[in-house]
Image 1 (cartoon, helix red, strand yellow):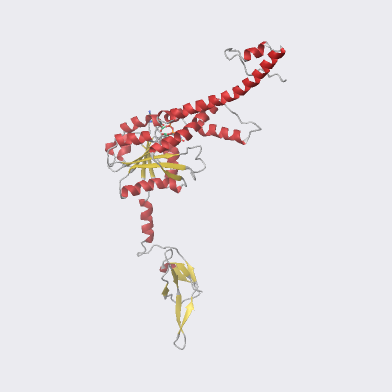
Image 2 (cartoon, helix red, strand yellow):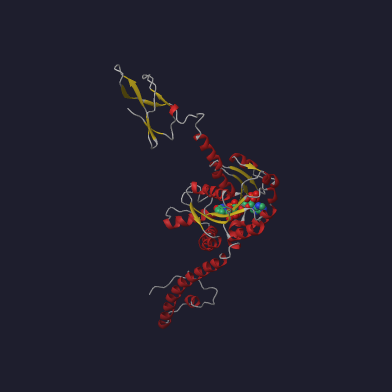
Length: 376
Ligand code: NAP
């Protein structure tokens, strides 16, 4: 039986005949495609040659040979795609990202205001309390994971002069125009800038990042190797199955105010109500409980940052308030209509009570919509 083997995965010397057959192997045909056929030549008694198909066994795959550069090259490519990433701000979100980044084989170091040496060690991250030491390790990428409201002071205090001149700066802040403008203003012009926002967190991304959006804006990325490095960083998210969305920082902030800020506000409002699970939860109520769960773990600093550092957030807060008022007016308006009908019908019949007359008076502070309605 002829063996057809992928040339790219098996080298000649790794093919050995079965022990029962002692004829030497000769590669007599090397396919022009990527397969090979090995057939041995056997001399017959009468001097003619017959082709004898050989049984082959694969004894080793890709055994390293002096001439086999393939595996070396693969290792080289693998190593070149690994980055040295320095995380600044090793709190909730910084640690969450670090787990996956380390899992993909990148080298991760971290610096934070508080001492996270122990946590970092368990995760395979080198922690530096001293930011000079941190920068002198020359990470290729600085990943800023500090709170929105502390970012400016964190960045201004970072000894960027100790970094390599071609460092890539990335942020993950939940607002985007603010860090973009800050980076452009503070960082030396040789540094590359990539603004990102993973639209998920330790709660919503705990089961994996597949299908979750990663918004990014290549604010200032050089050519050649710099562009490749930026892509390698983005590939961390792409490899996890994130939905990669390239978008300007301004557009991100418009959408984020309408979606994320509203979600956090509603989640926090509901959180204040201390909602509890009941034996008769509807699907809708379960969704509300999930919103509370998804937002409750985030710090107030984060929520405040979403409001303070996104110019569109105030408008959304006002819209939310107006929508609530309009809904209340609609409800109470209908109630008043029914009450008025009862009141004036009652007056006509001489039946109006003290209670219902106070209810109809909007100035009266004792007005209470819990007064039971009289049925006709
Ligand atoms: P956070 O409260 O927004 O930020 C905590 C981080 O900020 C910690 O690393 C903390 O350092 C640092 N920090 C706070 N005040 C500081 C100060 N005055 N000086 C120096 N460092 C200070 O919570 P987070 O959830 O970890 O978020 C971090 C960043 O990720 C934020 O920019 C947020 O917008 C973004 N993000 C978060 C999520 C999420 O779901 N949580 C999702 C996407 C993006 P220490 O711990 O050392 O004090």
